[in-house]
Image (spheres, protein in one colour):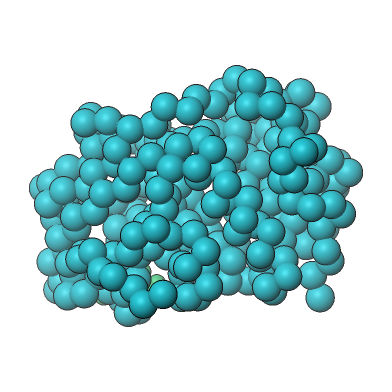
Length: 243
Ligand SMILES: Nc1ncnc2c1ncn2[C@@H]1O[C@H](COP(=O)(O)OP(=O)(O)OP(=O)(O)O)[C@@H](O)[C@H]1O
């Protein structure tokens, strides 16, 4: 059973002010994926992706298994190179950037943290590998995620929900304007997932991030996403979901 967090996640009354995160900036322009064409060397499907996300917006991405959701995420993150089309942020293409320089953070279902490192050390990585876990910015981010008391605990000894909050704290410090959410709540029970979902929703708006959510859970999509896309036959289409 997953232990409950020691205190409410990201409670606004206890949160440090935004100025406590000097790495963060609130201005984030439009993400535009247009005519993005891709085919795996040994693949049979021609993918064509078109999608926009405004700052502070979350869009959902649905599609059957094998439809291309991970492929699109890999293209955005720079792990795959498209044959044509573009991905622009603030009207500037991010395609020339290598993965490590892309303005992108990814939150997966699991494996988001280094198990042998402490919670604090994992979060410090959000600021590069020379920042100490005791750095004030790291402590602020941990506090914001309700993890102050767990800073020195090895990630291997944290619950699934606590690990996701460590990953979120690191994401907050990285403050990359594009957030890819790949089934981030799948391994968590509802009691644990609920506050984390609320925190993510709040951060997306607060920092003006552009979020794309892949989830099989309607409750996740309803809670987070304002617009919806579906991938079918290798193509993205904006759809209306029943409320
Ligand atoms: N390296 C590869 N070479 C050839 N085809 C691939 C490769 N990787 C993925 N594919 C194919 O591309 C298609 C899309 O795969 P992708 O992993 O993007 O789907 P997905 O929507 O993320 O699926 P799931 O929901 O099951 O994770 C699938 O048909 C898959 O078999």
